[in-house]
Length: 122
Image (cartoon, rainbow, N blue to C red; front, side, top):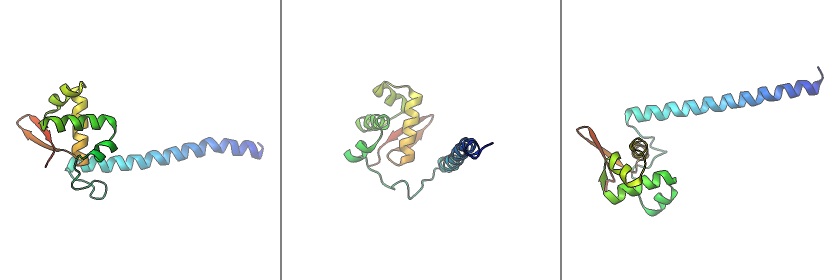
C-alpha cells in the first residue's frame, strides 16, 4: 500500500470521526434542553427574562413561529385549537409551536382543567 493510498483511506475515517464528535455535542445540548423543559427552568443567559413581542422580535423569529405568535397577539388568550383554526395548521403543530414560544419566554401558559391557554404577559 502506497502512502497516498494510506492517506486516502484515512480521509473517510477522519470525516466519520468529525461527524461522530458533532453528533455527541448535539446530543449533549439536546439533553440539557430536555432537562430544562422537564423542570420548567430557563437558561438565564440564553433566554431574556422579559421578552416582549415587539416588531423587531417578531421579525427576528422564524416564519412558522411568527405566524403562531401573531395569532396569539390578535386573540389575546387562546388554546392550541383556537390558534390552529386561525393559522389553518394542525392543532398538534400549533401546540408544539406555542410550547416552543413559552420555553423561549415570549408567551405564558396557564392550565384550566384540561385546557391550556397561551397568552402574552403585559
